[in-house]
Length: 143
Image (cartoon, rainbow, N blue to C red):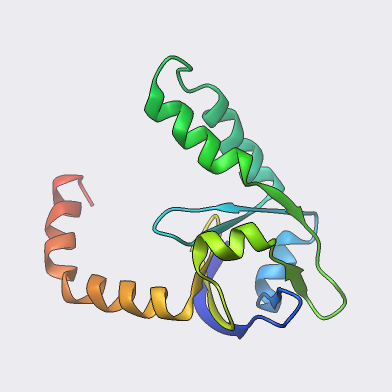
């Protein structure tokens, strides 16, 4: 399981370290892809396989299904850790997520999200300010 918020730098070659406790859960392999809200998603192989099976089962005849499948699968790449615990983030994914020098690795139980510093801090501030509204909507869902 992935939990927590960690700040890292991205080096000039596009490599970013992930927290050591995240790496333990990803040592058998990981996939990085476009996420939602302009961040990147990193999944362990088992979680990725579960998600990919659900994605390819979506109705091919529905435009929204095709678009979402393309978003998630077309940008997916295998990642490996180097000796310093860094992964190489492909240029097209850095561009998609506006990653430059500083980034956050956010643990969300079954996945890691990678956010640009600016986008995460803006998103987090907005979400914290509207936490009461969010809590009300979660109540409607039984949470």
